[in-house]
Every structure is written in C-alpha cells, then in structure tokens.
Length: 177
Image (cartoon, rainbow, N blue to C red; front, side):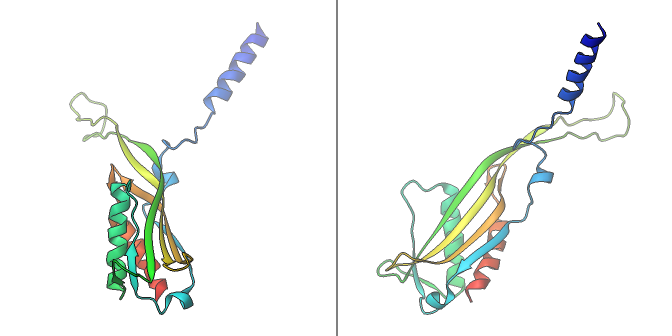
C-alpha cells in the first residue's frame, strides 16, 4: 500500500511539473513587438542602378502585396524609379510566419471577490510571428545585391503590423546609402 501511494505521489508530482512550450504560451515571454532587422548587401554593385520592377506572383497574399507596396514606396523615397520595361533591379518581398494564439486574461473593475464586481472573461488573440524578407536582385544576372530581413510579430488580430514593418524597412534601407 505504501509503494502504491509513493508511486501515485511521484506520478502526480511529475505531471504537475510539466511545462508546455507551445506557440500558445504567453506571448510576452516569446515575442517582441519590435522587428529585429538584419541585412546583406553588395553596395558596390548596387550603387549605379536606379530603376526597378516589383515581382509579384499570381497567388500573392494580401499581406505580401501590402509589404511589396511599402517596399516600393520606400525605394521611391530613396531615389529609385519604378519602370515596367528593362529594369536594372528586381525587387520582391516574402513573408514566412507561424500562427499563434495568446489568451488574454480578463479583468475585474473592483478589488475583492464580491458579486458586484464586473469581470471580463479571458479572450483569445491571434497573430503571426515570423520573418519578412526584402530582396533586390540584378535584373540581368538574378544575383541578390541586397537582402534585408525583419523578424518578430508580423500581425496581431489578423492586421498587418505595418508600423513596425515600415520602421524596420527604414532601418534596412538606411544601409543602401
């Protein structure tokens, strides 16, 4: 009888200590609101080229199309010109991400456990964590002349985090000059 009790207590102790490391865990410990940026560049090959064309596939997602527009606007702001024929550069954006769920706990408007306090039940927020990749290629050789990446929280509640993507892209494009 003592051994059965000891085995049950051991199993209970081990099961209660189990830690889940899934994507649905607390977002604050896993993801940052800011995008982390990194880039690779061949600025000597990029210096004399000023015209570009955006490459988009037929099955482009809404978020990727939006990121392509942001990228195109930033290039125009930095002295590059979009053309349809004979571009010197080809540009494109790619988003790779995983979906996550985060449970946001409810709140109470009063202190204490009374029946008169108003309580908001927990709710689930959805988003995407991943990487956005910006590429600039030589139109003749298809060689990658510049690549910038941003890693972090890309969408929250199915809305693209365009403010952070623009901020990250500003940091990356500063390396083009």
